[in-house]
Image (cartoon, rainbow, N blue to C red; front, side, top):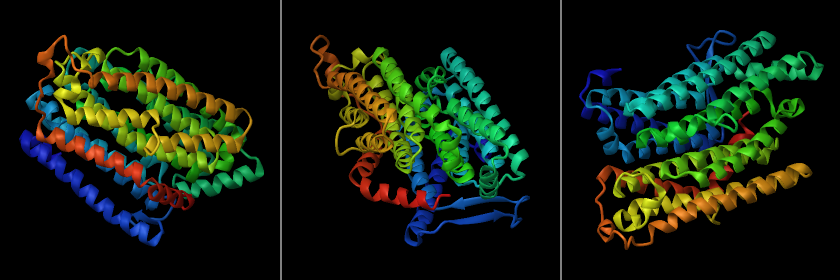
Length: 479
């Protein structure tokens, strides 16, 4: 709130300070949880259930949130100067406040142990994200923001209805208490239909907010018309907070045994597999770089939901891992794409990226790393996603194996077509316009953000075994 009366420079510095402070505190808690292996709950106001509210901190939450906060930091730095030019000076304070609210709501969604608190911060996240979409003030940005708001509010409404029904049949809002009541109901067979409705409403509501196929129509315009930081945060932070909450609902609130018995997993798996292919097909047709990267997000969200739909521990681990890997990679792609577009005359067209490496080597290197990562080149983080999903599908057997392997193969081939095709263009000199091969200087903050993203992605790739092991241990203690 104080940022609203500050100068633009002070508001920017305040936001950077808050991001760094949150990151430092979360890293300290992460080190503690990794050393002890324990998770702990804190009762807000020291009131017990059913009146109290709780936050719960463990290995899974702290490791995931550390990656998310690093992404926010690098996205804010990477798009800082470009955003200052695209946003009216009198509204830059609002932009900083919206960034703070996105970060705040993400922290709450990761740490909360209360369903109604989760809904409150879903709404805060939605309003802040819609504001980020509309900050550029152009006609397309405003239309994209309105579409984003309409679809996401519908998803929030479904989630709220699900929470109300869940409270009606269990009498609790704290997640642990709900889990005990749901287990008792499942054992006796009571409220089978209402429980199915609850899981369906929550799943569909959060799937709409994550842009799972076929609820993805709002996503390309919202992502491609936002500021660089807005695009990076929308694609990798806002949607990933909802995914983390959905995993929390499945594992901690309802229990995966109950989820599998309700048949929800099969629905998620089918639509996730379709999304993997449909998003990739649309990305091959995109004419602009940002639209291509935006449609790619639909495919990557499909990966996460298809892995969840496998209904196994390995499938959940695959979804969690890809949530982190995609968060780091997609933000880097959006920041580098904005930088490359600027260096190529701001036409935004993919064909105009020819020779972009010579104009902006750092941005081209970051885009190349992100592109080959999402294609699934061995030793990189997304390759681990694809291998893990294949292993999880083979363990399940039957039609899941066939569908998953086919979707993986088709999506990977399409990824290679549009990502590698675009990447190769950047390294071919533009002989028709030799003057466009001159190097374009990028600002210090953009370079710092891109270097940070490259380091984060390489860390997730080369230290995957340790991070994956920490996530696996955290998942075992998550319920």
